[in-house]
Length: 328
Image 1 (cartoon, rainbow, N blue to C red):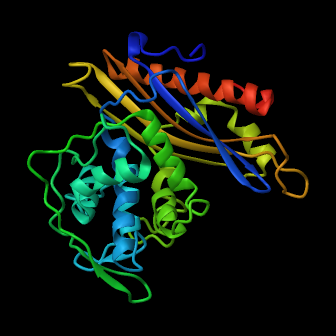
Image 2 (image 1 turned 60 degrees about the vertical axis):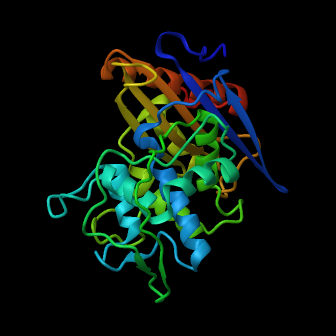
């Protein structure tokens, strides 16, 4: 709380899920500013969570996930996840926006079931809810029959928007834990292919043919990148570092009427490797972070979020990594 005081002028909320890997597995330590269970509107930051839930439902039907192709549109779901994170809808597919694909994920797997999944699987509090759309209708081009490159097929959906509507109202603790599980799918015993689709987009993109990495690796924000000396992180890790993020923002009509809100769901892996490219014990950082702020303007909210992410990153570097050389 001394690093990021709770509430205050920007109603700041933040949670970190700090990961430590060791020979017998891994441990997770949760750090927060005292508002870790305070639910709020996460805006578009929750679209990747809707995709993860869609993958879970699809896998429960058959051996088909986010690396599959929608047979109606012929688009790869993993390519659509790059639309979600990059907001690049392209003039050739004008109805296929980030917001529309976010809604599509709920129509594939069910709004009510997304809410159940958030509570029963992720561990969300009774005060939280999930299953709302994102302000735009599902594209008419897409369908609900899916096929993998190996020819496996399933049908999932459509699940229309329910009445009454389910709002997206989640805490930083729930979302940080959810992001951690997406990244650590292998350790959680889940199918890695779905997490790869969320984090990197299509392995061989068709909508973005010259793109090396899509998905959450090309989020629109640079809060984590600006919080530390990325050049030094690149040097000490031999280039084997990662940052994933999904931003959400909008003008509130509920918690902070008239104010601009930002929520960040992010993940950073900043290892320290020796000359043999092996990790150095007790060095480097790996963590999920979810933070939320509100302010009178978008510019003020942006500055407030950067201050939060920088303060948290530098605290973690000092107390859990001792890598002062990467501090800004």
